[in-house]
Length: 364
Image (cartoon, rainbow, N blue to C red):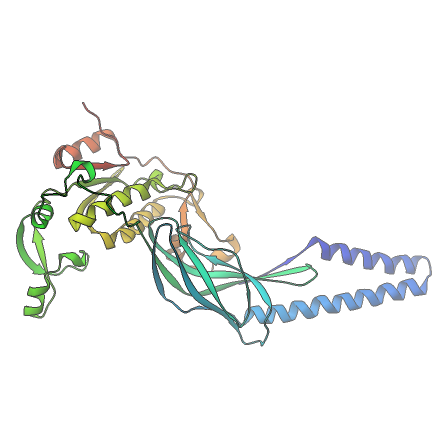
């Protein structure tokens, strides 16, 4: 997990010192020859001493975070605490780049070994991301050698929630579904029954009074989702590919979040070519829905269609799941749902209830 990168300056200096020595030897100039040899030995001693000390320091360094998980919204920032500890009692200044997906943004840090420091994370895309490590760089004062060390860690889970839209729904909700005048029961659908809580469902479906009475988590089963819309979300690779730093899926997820503020839970139908899934989603589930969609799409893509902000020579130290957590779409594939499939789905749901996100439907 250590890589050494010599600079061109190191090669040039060695060529100059060797040249001085050989010129003294060829011209029978003992002073020039010995002077070149002394410089060569002194310089080599400096390079080897720094190299060995830097290698040992990097080898015994460890990256730790104070927090195991944080939550923020798109566009907001949070501060986490970290430390690079080493068994070698050195306080060298190093450069640290965190390894994570573009869901969050972090700066290149100048920190000292064996000192605590803070990291500012800014939410960029809706979803669930992880910091799986960092790359530390040590560079000597003359700029001759750079030592890179991959620091793996247990990681930090980062949940990026949609923006809190104040008055986003207002009097008229998404797709014309009104908020005013609708009871919660009407919005969520008619009560059908109680059953043991399914942990894949949102916690908002738990009936707490019954749960307290029977000593077990119970949830409400409802009928059709009344006055709340049904979202049909395109989850093709195109929706996940960033353009000018933005992804189409984030706008769609924000719309679902806005609706869940007054519906509690909403039905979301995920569709792409040869793929249809239905989910019941609450506001707190949206980042995990994004991750489920993203991982599913990434698994269907080849390496030529994905990007990972991690040098190839360090990737072998992570397993597939960890690499998927930091990967994103570079080039979409032809996985858009057909218009016929979308039309059939809309006819099943009902035109007056469906809200299309990232899709087009034929009027024919």
